[in-house]
Image: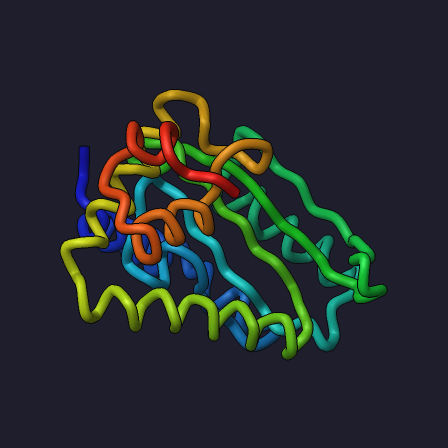
Length: 183
């Protein structure tokens, strides 16, 4: 199993080789986010937020065309949604084999306020990890273990649960988290 930094290097190469960041910049301000941004990747997953001030269906279709041609995804979804707060957001998600490995991409088009909150969250986690870099691999390993057990999902444990368990509660394994963590 690759360590987080090695996964991030592979992700960066994919982003460079496919030109995805440059393509997304045509639609708005690009903000890599999540475990990729924080360099605590546990699996082949790239999350990117794009400021969506001018997103519309025509642009959604154009980006869809780029994704289909460039990535030949085995799964793809693109949609417009209205959040509980009444904000319009756009989503592009796909899975594609790259170099013989399955990679997941989640691209969200949000407003500036939502992106700022996500970046502040990631900055807070990164700040805590700067003081305890050994916890990066603990977080990644717990995520991998939960994924392997089929317990890493929105219904069960997700990344924020793992960050809290490790950074606030001092947990060091998936077994400990399963046994002692309470949402």
